[in-house]
Length: 251
Image (cartoon, rainbow, N blue to C red; front, top):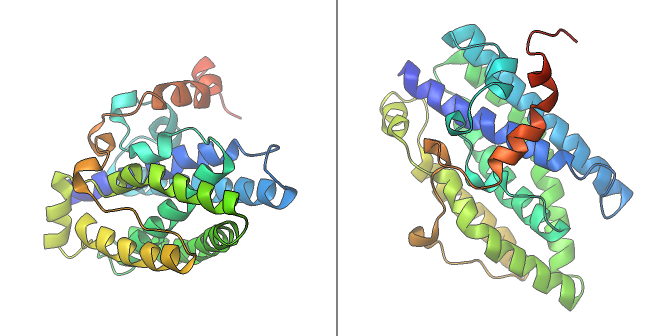
């Protein structure tokens, strides 16, 4: 089961690192000061989650140290979903991604609180508390914009519709999935997707928006197996530019 756990933790860490970097791009350009600070704070949380997960891989599973895991791998070695790789775009898309992703991530951590691998279970018990504030923020602004003007409602509906196929890609099933479920470590992506769909559909409907069809044929997969969008390589180049100048430097 150890290799399956490694795969799961790497997926989680890479998602958090890449989306944390994306969210940090709102620093200084948020639509209002409150949102500038909010996305900066949530970006910091996500990068902290990534560090904690890379540290588990290093200290308990024999993987390289967190800096090497985060910054020194090739593009195809990352296991993030393509959803987190997309540019921040306009605020409506960023908010839609924030809403759809953070609900899925909260559910995943809630599913891991009783994982028999205690380092991951301990982290899950801590992180789920932080993520409750993330989803509260997302839910609040989704409802406000959906119930605002006709323009704000239309833009949020369009953003959710555009983000939906990428969001379905968060639940890409790998070989690790069945192994973890059989061992009682993690119920799997099918279960997580079912819980997520129920949760986000209720909130979307309550906001007066329409839930897109959960069409499996439109789901954008690949990231969990190392096949990424055109946006990941430039992001990694930017993210690792300084550390690659001198990988042995101490800061």
